[in-house]
Image 1 (spheres, rainbow, N blue to C red):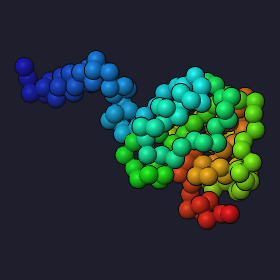
Image 2: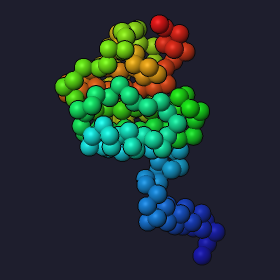
Image 3: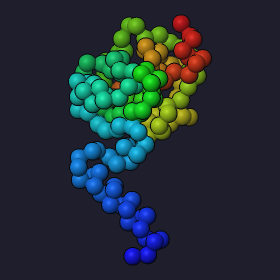
Image 4: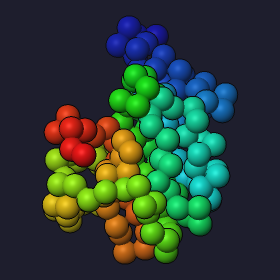
Length: 150
């Protein structure tokens, strides 16, 4: 085998091995993140427990059709995460309106487009949350400017 084929062949074999061992999405493993879907809030929080990102405790109890992505290699509560859920419920009363000073870190195709993000958002703990047509979209970490807001 030629030396020029050795590296691509080895990389392909490694990715195939990761996929077959049930380690999840090989791209996620390489990028040090998790991503997926969850049918309910309970399923979302269970999947989320494998990441150091802040718990998305703002997600309403009746939330369904959750989509998520989060880093797995950062410091607790400073690791980026993004969640989108379907829910007719309101956010917790502890959320407060603030000026948006950050953006979602991942830019998934299911994310709210940057041009559609409002200037005023809800701060729910370490999360910034905005309404969608059928529920909520949130991300973390907060920018330093948002973290300093009351």
